[in-house]
Amino acid sequence: MAGPSSHHIRNICVFDGSSPGKEKKFLESINHLGQVLAERKIHFVYGGGSFGLMGGVLIAAFFGGSQVLGVVPKALAKGDIIGKTIGEELQVYIMSDRMNTMFNHADAFIALPSGLGTLEEIFHISSWAQLHIHHKPIGLLNVNGFYDNLLSFLDQAMEQQFLTSSAR
Image: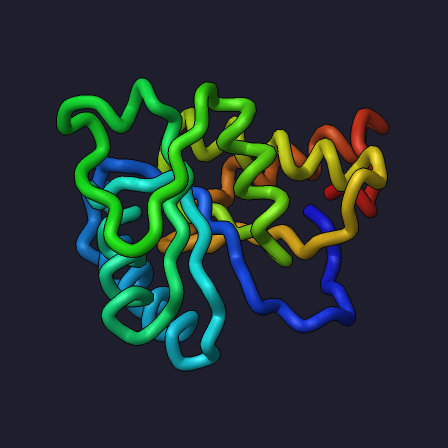
C-alpha cells in the first residue's frame, strides 16, 4: 500500500461493508475509528448507507461532529439495500462514478474488515497509486488480523516479483 504523505488529511474515504461481521471487536474498533476521525475534525467520505460496519463508523463520526459524505449509486439508493445515509448524500449513476467521486473528495483511504466490494475498492485505489495517478495514503484497519492473509499474499507477490515493495 502507499506510504505516508506529508499533506494534512482533512477528508478520509473509508471502504467498508454492510455486514457487522462475526466478532464484536470489529464493531468496537470501527466505533473507535469514527470517534478518532471526529476528534481530529477529519471529514468522512464513504459509499453511503448505515448497515453493518459502515453504520458503526458513520454514526460515531457523524455524532462526534465529522462532516459526512455518502456517495451512493442510484440503483443502491432504491429500497432498503444499504440503509439510510446520515449526513450529506450524493447520488451517482454507476459504481465507477462512485469510486471517482470518493477519490476526488478524499485525501487518504482506509479499508475496514469487509468483503469483495471493499477488496475491489482498496485494490482499485492501490493500483492507481502504483500507476502514480495519486500519492494519497492508503491503509488497512487490520482488526484481529483480518487482513493478515491478504498481506501475506502481497508479500508473496513481491517475492515473486509481481509487485514492487513501494506498491506493497
